[in-house]
Image (cartoon, rainbow, N blue to C red; front, side, top):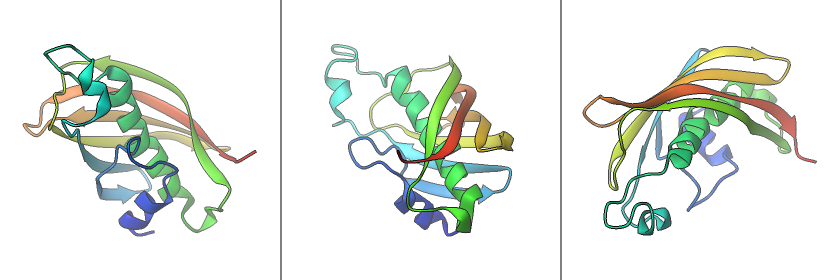
Length: 145
């Protein structure tokens, strides 16, 4: 599956799409980027006069790139119209802040994929190559109800 096709298969749209580009995908992992535009709504109140990207948004970005995109890639030709990759858990460490207009790169390594369950180790780095957060995301592949 073409990397641009993976993004088209995502069940998200702006303002909740946190994938700009996928750089690499194989059966063991995926890498992609996202730039946090300064006009995103959550910056208006997090934090007042010192906007920082909320940890829940960083986690969502890592899950979208590192787990959902990888799940779509792994399913390949078996991906059906009613298939979804559902986020089930995360264990994150936040190491540095991510500010408006920062571009981040997420790299994911598959640790488990069996019986519709996918678990990945994910790392997010800023443009300087410094880790800003890392952790584990997990999900399951299911069909829409």
